[in-house]
Image 1: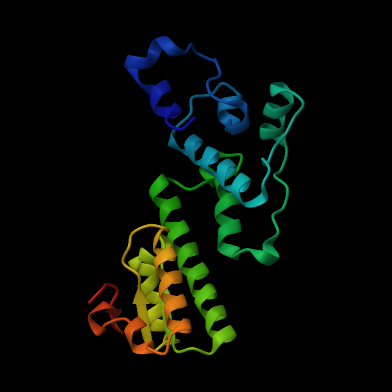
Image 2: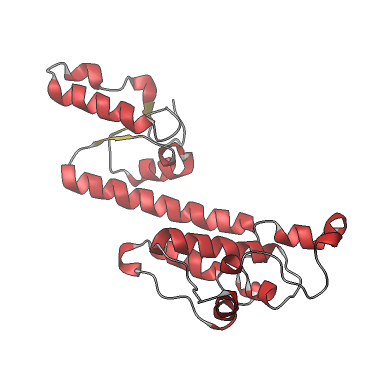
Length: 212
């Protein structure tokens, strides 16, 4: 359903729709689409809100016995609450702002959504590493996986001053977790602990946001 605003506003795609018609999948309709109004990029942001809600809650924010009931729900019903107690508050705010009924109450652009989600990601990463420090008491941190390559979030971890040494496993993607598990097994299972420590050139240095 992404890009419907462009398709419906494009002269080259004018043969796909008529004035007042509805285009898209009912589960991801924005209220303005459901009313047959001309959508704009903020209609796509509403669909992003629906997807984010599904990812978090495991169900769609609006349901109906058929498309007519579903469209009515998009127009008139409020989405059910999310379990804010287990979520970063900023994430809940992003989801519900995307799901606002009026386009003017949503984010202005996808760039604004991306910025808001970056801030949420940084807060989540900080909560995770603080929790790891509380559990282990270690002053050393090793992270792996796709999110671990978020250099802005890593910079916030460094500036928090929780750890003396931080090492980011440089394999891009979640496959890096397997490498970390193998190194951890080697470190815990042998007496040659120094072999498993990262070389100084691979540590994330305090005061910087990148790899040295």
